[in-house]
Image 1 (cartoon, rainbow, N blue to C red):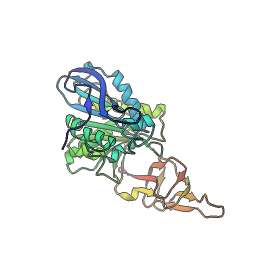
Image 2: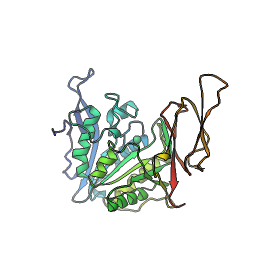
Image 3: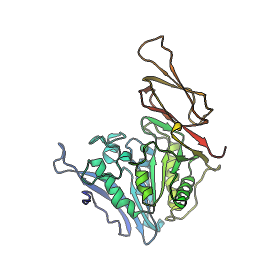
Image 4: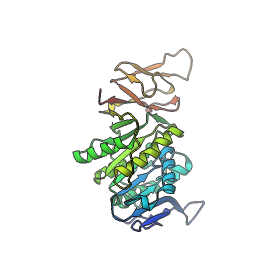
Length: 333
Ligand SMILES: [Zn+2]
């Protein structure tokens, strides 16, 4: 496979702290010989594990972007044994545009792996992570939230993996992130995820959903700040005390696709349960009202399983095929 067209302006092997860019040539109407300049910070001190921390995989999920720009300013080499690579705005064009996907190629970073060095801009960034950055790391944390169209109870997450030791390490990392909920996630579309690319290289991988709606709050930023602090201790790179909530996290599972409730109607979404509420199989979760005319009975959607409403659609307007509810099952229950 051909080499990447991305050039880093930092030396990943050099001790100390460097701020720079991943430079991706992009010839556009605005800049014929221009580059996409993806900010990157490397903090390295001697031998030790490497953590790769990413935000902005989706451009409208602000907890990771904010926490990692802050960490890039605050983390110093003397606090580190090993190496921390920080990319706060992974899909940089999407982050600058405030959108989930890239305005250049409509690329969804988390559906673009393993990427392509000769592909679209989003595929080229994915390829650079897959073949250059991920192989450097032992631990990877990718901070997501719901973005403009989803909202979640705050959780860290790991996946079921073929290697039990790797799965256990990922779940342990998710627990020590310090979010109030830990979800063992079932994904609808695994093949092209960054998660899958990292996990298939044998790394310890933790991801998150820290609320959403295309904004952030003091509470959700605090969760991300604390999670990053805890993750670096978990990785054995920094020392100090974990900052964990007083109560241990609630463990949630998503056993299969019936956790996702998807609309077969277009119209106005009326959710009948709130995030974090318990529902029983058969309970009314949502009505979808017609916006065409009055006098139409709403479509009613009932839960197919017992669970907790872990995620919901954020906008009230809904189309056929939109996921409007995500149920998770308590593992302790
Ligand atoms: Zn996301």
